[in-house]
Image: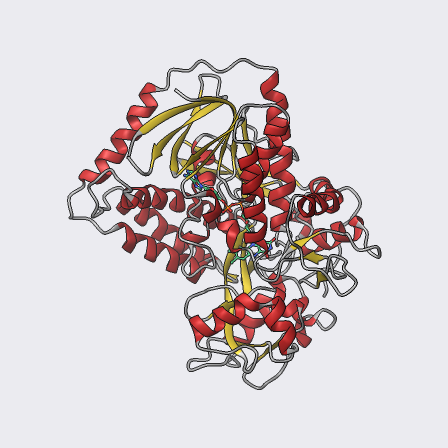
Length: 564
Ligand SMILES: Cc1cc2nc3c(=O)[nH]c(=O)nc-3n(C[C@H](O)[C@H](O)[C@H](O)COP(=O)(O)OP(=O)(O)OC[C@H]3O[C@@H](n4cnc5c(N)ncnc54)[C@H](O)[C@@H]3O)c2cc1C
């Protein structure tokens, strides 16, 4: 049975950074991923990573912008850690081989991004995530003697001992279907977000909330789950992302009258206001009949105002994306976009070292809620979050491992339970609904009622639907009855994870009776600091979500009216 000091579930940027940090501190490390590591969703990140590295910048300015972007729900101690450690982290990435874009003077170039008071986004064209992920993977190879890689292994549950300490996981090898117990002194969840609980989404098919649900089922609290980010520029048909880098380079948003409507809601920052503000402004244009396209469901993103040479150099992937998926040459004509689900600010509640309230269990990256993003994440702060808190989790877990023995737990009963559950899914008769049908309905329902605008009746309807879908999930059938690369059965498990994420999102959205950040309640349109300047925590209690509150941490910035 494999046993490790630090076992990391997830090999995106958060997981790989955690693995490297733990290995550098001498721990025996393992990293597990349900897909090959460089296919982790971090590879899709486009626009860049924030850090106050310009001589004119200061990390406190970055921190203030992040606090304001979060609509004052972000924890300021965590934001200070992230922003003050950012410059060294980005320079470290450069030193290990990331080919950041340089300007004519040969300095690292920085681009503008939403909600930022100055240019502070370092980038590699519009493939920043891919560039970072591949360089970290090379580094991981260098540590092959101390870092074991379990590639294409799917974690089915976390193991906890009688005192509630986390001491490993159960996982299934995707290639063979073999089930295995993994013992660990510490487990770091780095499983990414839950975008697939929505349809459409910018997130890939593998982003199914596994880590959030695994932690929740083990008794860990989730925090800020109501805060789901809709990105302002997604393709109308597919929901695919056009990076904020396009607006950072100067692209305009236009309604059907050809107006730059951002003038109304963000006269200073215009298209570079924070994402919640821009998405709402777009949705208002669409709802009030000033949208573009056949049924007025879109907005024009006009990249033609950016010099063509610059677009071809710095935004080359979205040039391809526009051509291949919308039939539009963005260097010559506007492209139709709309707000679309993109990111989840909430997740597993952690402290600034990634520790959850469950001993031995850490979380970092999009799966976690530290909370540095609060009510709304600033673009290019997520890659930073993955790396800073991935590293800190790895370091902390390695230090903790050095002072403790390997847990001695008989997990055979849990192994059997997980194996039986999988066998039962495979054996289901074809008299319920298909997994894919339920998943589609879930995503569409979330996109209808838990999106840019929300209100009580719609959220209640969504909750009822989720309860019905949970019940139907217990009977949902799949086609593949085999053991080799049975993605069908994993899809059924993922559906269960997404239902947990959707339920906790809707419960928290119902609970928060105000509008803040990404949560805009049309029935409670004002921000209400007196009653709601607090986090909503959700814990699984007797099989149902239980709500409690925790305070927001303030250090230097008091809440103020948020204007862009
Ligand atoms: C299109 C797009 C563009 C973006 N652009 C930017 C940007 O420019 N700047 C920015 O800051 N942010 C950006 N983001 C957000 C950012 O990319 C993500 O938030 C971040 O990369 C998440 O990284 P992660 O390490 O937390 O998770 P991921 O990279 O999603 O990795 C999750 C890992 O967990 C593994 N895993 C999950 N479940 C299991 C399981 N059950 N068993 C085993 N393994 C499992 C997966 O295999 C994977 O290895 C973008 C997001 C999208 C969708």
